[in-house]
Every structure is written in C-alpha cells, then in structure tokens.
Image (tube, rainbow, N blue to C red):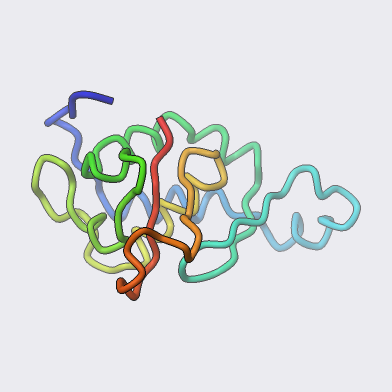
Amino acid sequence: MNTVDESILIDQDVVNQVFLDCLCTPREFEQMDKDHENCLIVESRFGRYLFNIGRLEAQREQIKTWLEALPRVFFEENGAPFSVAFYQENGPVWAGIPMRIDQLFAMGQGLDLVVLLPESNPQPNQNQAWYKIIH
C-alpha cells in the first residue's frame, strides 16, 4: 500500500447502505442457532453487529478500496486513533458522523482487513479506540 488513488472519494451514504445490506435480516437472526455458519458477530467501538457472511464477502473489494483511501498511519504497526478516520489520505473529510467510520471498520473487521487494537495501545492517554488496517 504505497500510493493512494486520488480519485477515490468515500461516500458516507454508500458506506451506510452497504453496511445495512450486509447485516443479517431478522429471519437470518432467528435461524442463527441452527445455521450460525452464515452469520458473523463483529464487536466494534460502538456496538455488536451481526453480518451475513456471504453478503459481506461480496462487498470485499469495495470495502477494501474505501479502507485503502484512509490515512496511511492506519497501515503502520501501531495503527491510529479512530478520529483520524474522518479524513481520507488525500485530504477530504468523508464521514459526517462517527457511526459511518464504525460501520466501515466493523465491515473491515468482519473481513479480517481491520483490527481493533487492544487496550494496551501504545498511546494509553488517548481516550478512544485505535485501529490497524491489514495489508
């Protein structure tokens, strides 16, 4: 991940729609005890989400593209604080509310593209979650 495609602009409304489309339906949730291999629970900064694995996987390339547009510091060993993700690497603010960042990171976690770093973060004075994007 050495360069950033300057033409990529993350649209928070599209992130929200993809996120909602990837969530398990009430029916899938009801059947989770019988067929839990189709659903995946992800714990993020703001909550716990239940994703349909197939629909989430179908969005892998789009989610990866969005993650690659975030600041390079997320790809470094120590990751970065959640608040840095309001901005894209090429400068523009893409997220108007923290929930959109949480949705993007949660989808990334479900695809093993993002890690929510443990509380033993190298910056213990920061009162926020830190994330790392995996190459």
